[in-house]
Structure formats: structure tokens, C-alpha cells
Length: 94
Image (cartoon, rainbow, N blue to C red; front, side, top):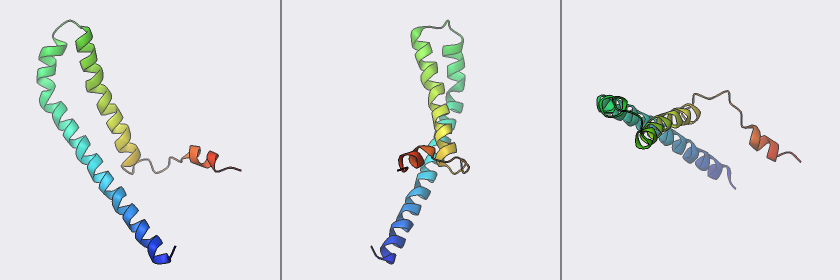
């Protein structure tokens, strides 16, 4: 593999990482916006009534997704710079 091919591959990889970060930020922004505009309805329709299996499922789905999205944003958004990938270094050992 030539040096130019390696440089091209690295440039493409860095471009894909940058696009991935922008898409992650956009997704988190839409998620927060959706939660904010539907919060009054949630308070009226879910929190004002007794808990049922359906409302528990709704709440689980509503608040699990943002937690996972924030973890994804933290990990892939460049905020977790000090975290190492120990699993891959263990598999490389002889």
C-alpha cells in the first residue's frame, strides 16, 4: 500500500468520524427538543394518572433513550478522550 493510499484512507476515516459527530449532536438536539415540547402532555396524561403497565412502558422508553443517547454522545462526541479501549489491547496479546 502506497503512502498516498494510506493518507487517503486516513483522510476518509477522519471525515467519517466528523460526520458521525455532527449527526450525533443533531440527533441529541432533536431528542431534547421533542422531550421539551411533549413534557406538558406527559405531565397531564401520564403523571396525573395512576401507574399502569402501559404508562410504565412509556416512561421506561421515554427516559431510557435519552440516557443511552447521552452516553453515546459522551463516548463518540469526543468527550471521553481519557477512556482507553482495554478490550482490544487484551485481544492483541500473544
